[in-house]
Structure formats: structure tokens, C-alpha cells
Image (tube, rainbow, N blue to C red):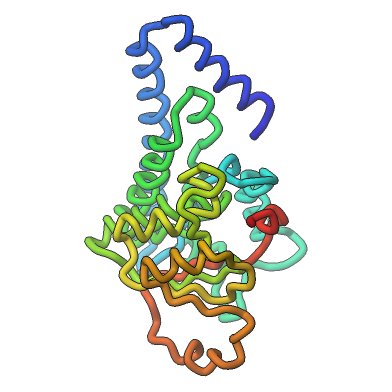
Length: 272
């Protein structure tokens, strides 16, 4: 978390300690949250209208950035990822054509509704319970605009919980998840943080948002990770048995949602 961000939150904590009327702070926080959701809503509405006007799209991937990094147990790099991902997508060193010949600059293929203003919300003293709700609501706002389909850019792995929750609630029930990662992210509350990047799937399973969870590529798992997996009925496939499991995995019936959890940031190695 940035120095300015820490100062902002500490400032609001001092205001509370100084007996400033809680209603005053709450009203200000409400305005910031409402403005944040309005920004996502109106951008999604605009992009949805554009895609529908062009016509011919059954579904259009829509980028939604969630620059959150404070729930990482070590480095904060994931918070800076959304703009870097966009920079790579639109880098002038190559063209916008995909391997299938689709053009990413065609709004029927890809749109962008911007970022959830995570730091601005936290600077107002909003806690993680409410922040997770804001992320969930932002995902739902994108899903409401047909034919947009949110493609969420993190952000540390804690955002998996509010994103999956939103999709599950919007679709009306638990979903199937294929989770590709070196770690199961299923600690009950890693280092005492229930929203830790290493605890996102514990929250997902507790909430009943996943009907079936397959975790593939696991190569660093503790006894708690195994116990939590058994508790929630998770299907865990480790790299040490990948050769044995490969045929089964290659012939899986397609699941509802895919989350690519490939390692990109070194802070993941700090999980114990």
C-alpha cells in the first residue's frame, strides 16, 4: 500500500478517535462509493450501447480493472497490474489481431469499462467488508449490460472472492470453477486476514458460490490446504501427479468459469 494511502486511512482513524460524528464520515464514504459505482455503471452502459448498436455480438469481453494489492502477504505489485496489462494489449510493437484472426480493437470482441477506484475508496476509510461488496457490485453492473462479459484484471488473489460471488449471484446459483494455480488459496484466514490473497477460495466455498472446484497445477500446499480441500470437497490435482491425471484433465466437460491463476508475482512464494 502506498505511503499516501496509509496516511489517508490513518487520518480518518484519527478523526474517529477525535469523536468526529460518525454520521459525517459515513455520509462522505457513501458518496464516494456511490460515485465509484456510478462511474462503472455509466461506462458499462455506454460500452453496452455501443456494442448493441454495432450489432452481431453474442458476447463481448469487457475489461474491468481491480487494482488491489493490500491483501497480499508480502509484495504489493498486483495493484499496479491493470494498466500494465492494458499497455501490453495495446502495445504498438504488434497488431491487434488474435491467433483466430479476431481484431481486439473491434468493440464486439473487446471493450473496457475502466477500474474500480480501490485506493480512492480506501483513502476514505472504507473497510474491506464494504470494499469487497463494491467489487462484487461493479462486476454485476457490467454483467447487466448485454452482451458485455466482465474480464477482470487483478489485483491480488483476494479479488477472486468478490468476483466469483458476483457471478454466482447474478447467474442465480453456484458455478463450476477451474482454478489454475501453484497454491490452493484456501487457508481459513492466512496471517489472521480473512480476505488474504491466500484465503479467497475459503470464502468462496463457505459462501456456497461454487458447485464444483477443480484446482489444477498445485505444487505448494500445506496440511491446512489439504484439510480445507477435503472439508469443502475440492478436487485438487498436484503437479507431482500431473502425468497420471493429464488424460482425465484433458477430457473435462467444460466448466462455467475459468480463472487463470498462473504465477506472475513473486509474493506468492511467501505463503507458508
